[in-house]
Image (cartoon, rainbow, N blue to C red):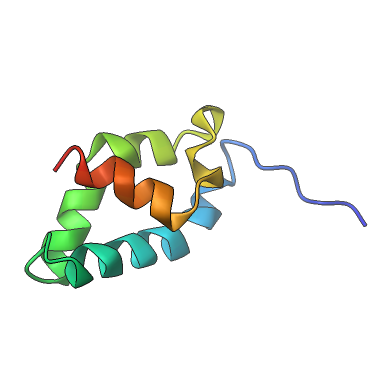
Length: 74
């Protein structure tokens, strides 16, 4: 079975689930006051800038690694 190749043109398809999980983790750990705050933190962070670039391979990271990265910069 052929696995689809992740490219810059389709990496955005992997992000919604990761962003939702990351926002939930920020809320659970008291780093964000509400969902809008959590999403703003994520979308304005250097972590998101790396996530949306296929070449960084951040899309490969799990939620724990992404959370560790983002909590260090917020």
